[in-house]
View 1 (cartoon, rainbow, N blue to C red):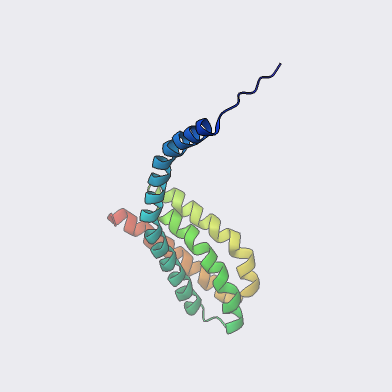
View 2: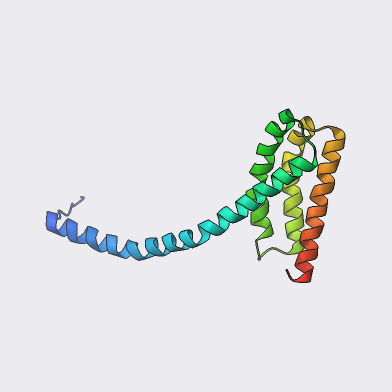
Length: 140
């Protein structure tokens, strides 16, 4: 036999009030953390997008190619920045993860770029990985 407990309107308000108070502090802390992180994430994403545009210029893309390639590179940018800025990953792990991201987009890019442009893109990416590793070793 099931029994139902009936709460008065005052009891319900008091219970909800206690629940709201106990949830406020964690919610407030999460909000503060997100507010603190957001500008840094925006800056990192903007930096990644700027790098994508620089790569597009180095590849000497046609306007049609640029319209297809830039969205792919811009989509990669935040993922790449996240890996590069992850202090818990070793240099080797970062390199593997970066190459995995690059290999995800490789088929699309190979269809859009000429063989020479794709080869240049691969060279640019490898050079960026090497530079990041050198900065890491130098302590920067």
